[in-house]
Image 1 (cartoon, each protein chain N blue to C red):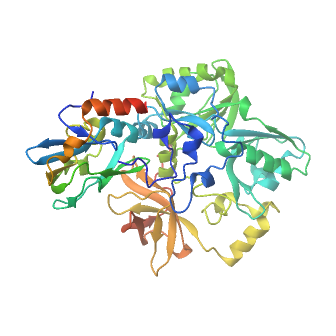
Image 2: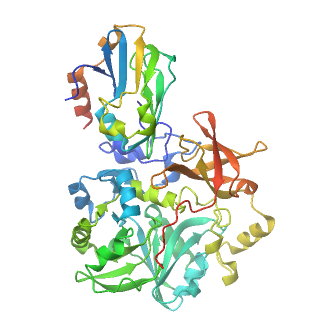
Image 3: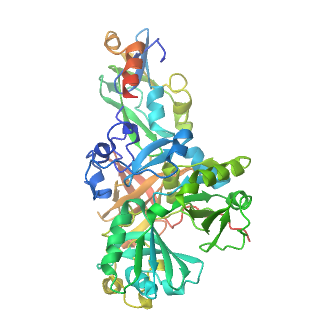
Length: 411
Length: 127
């Protein structure tokens, strides 16, 4: 058999023992798009992969390690399906230290954040976070990110792993406001505890009252004597927390959380489950649904795009596009039968029109095969019959509204 | 040690020959590399295959992998249980998760493939 022959935009995990960067740039093509285009490298090919402070812990736990965004990260420990279901049914723990952190400080911190992002950060209060987009002058995405307001003069941006240096340089270039900037990634370990039991598991380890922390709010406090930023955020569609703290405490916190949650069925989870969970929750992934060619309107992210807040990088183009109308729009879809649509597959709509799958795969909790695709706007409403071309065959699917999965909220 | 009652390909398929019929599957090494199997696409009975020709597809959560027939023949039986339970490939790749049976067109073909010892050495090299 040929491993992974047609699904190129994935992790070449079976080549783990070979030269990582050679594998990363093996030009296995899907839809004319190669690894190099999706994971651009700014450093020479001889630079080894970066490791998080929890790397040894992952090896000890028997993780299958892969290269991702310039880092060596766990793809899975016990299996993607088991890890996905653990997060949906009880809880899972992720090392997300590969994500980047950028600190913005000073009297003009907000002005800079407002200029380079599309959401309205002036609506945040101390201890509140928002999902946003880091914009190009064309109104497209440099990255997606979380903006945390720590104080009126201090913001923490959490950005994607492969983009942190590029994002930082972009913000530096746009900093005509004199804000103080720090590329703070190395100062943080970040772990995500996600699932219905996450709160209970974490509460055993801290005096910080977790229940009052609302969704997309955060607090500072001590977890096992370690100063942490405890944020009620996540990328799974479940309740949960993301903890940011100094790397020297990594093993202590990681091991303590796993131990605390053992009785609840908490297991460590890798990037494989992280991807299936976010897909099932209808969340975008940079490099798939959003990139430097997509605008928030096209990606269905109008809720985080606020031109009314005032002019920002790319806002004039965005207002123009809103007026003129879109040529493509992101939609969710479900396969009608058992075949699976994958990233990059072509979509056939009615009237000879076409689109492309951005992300596709199985939804382990819903027990369906799902995906997201860019299609001409008139097909981006629920209930439209479309076809996905799978190995030369047109296979029936239908559009659905996002998200595919929504967790039960406690009253 | 992989089972000694069969032959193996470099592409991690196995074939067990019994009286003119070859039973085909993928190896434990293959299922481990794939991860959780979620879908299996197989040929219809009556399909004629040459050795090395694409027989079907095994899909894991993350990837789509082609399977190639180790030998030439006509598909006589397909393992229908894999439709409802594709995870059998992870649980019992050398037994319950056989994929197809072929009526062999050339009984000597299988002998040219790797035996158990050769395949064990082959995958040890990959480690």
